[in-house]
Length: 229
Ligand code: SAM
Image (cartoon, rainbow, N blue to C red; front, top):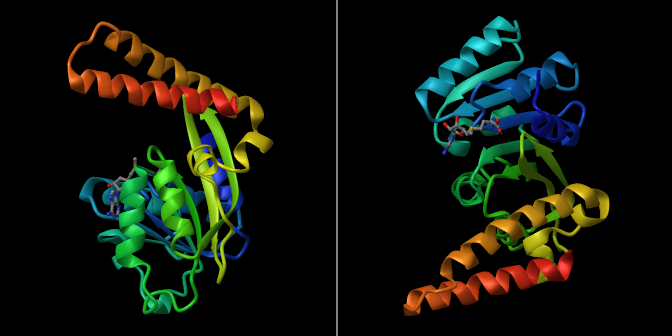
């Protein structure tokens, strides 16, 4: 009963990976991967007690206590070198929080070999892309899924001595998404455009300087969207 979104994340995990799923909540993703026989070692990290208890219960219910290990702690603190983690999944949170978790925790001591990253940010995708590319992580694949009226972008990043060069437009909209899932891509940006248009309509009569600045900003965002659609 994995969501369409987490199914896409699961697709990016390589068979035999040693996984840490950070912010795992019910641990649905690692439990699914183990039950599918795709992996046999995962850490499910949680920093909040309720979700951590949910992970512990789910792991017990599914009988995967020898493969999935719920651990309580902040971000990558739950990982040690001995775990030999080669893949991280961080999904369902803001892109800013994801960059903070990576920035604080992605140390050489914990990860002698830089792990693959599979990330799904709910907001701030552009900032996340920028962060990855400026920290030796090349984004090698991306996908977008629509589920229950929402759009989710998922990216796979790998450590490289040299990363590719992304334009501002690619940082904002992605590089591979428009090519591979053109319908979902269009639907997402049409929906964002519509939201921006509503903000703009609300500002039409506005006279204050702040409102004028906002008007300019949203006009620019709409123009950017029109360039890619
Ligand atoms: N990853 C799952 C998914 O994509 O469906 C659950 C997403 S849930 C919305 C986000 C989870 O991240 C919450 O359970 C929250 O407690 C956890 N979280 C937030 N900040 C965290 C941190 N610094 N370290 C570990 N977990 C964190």
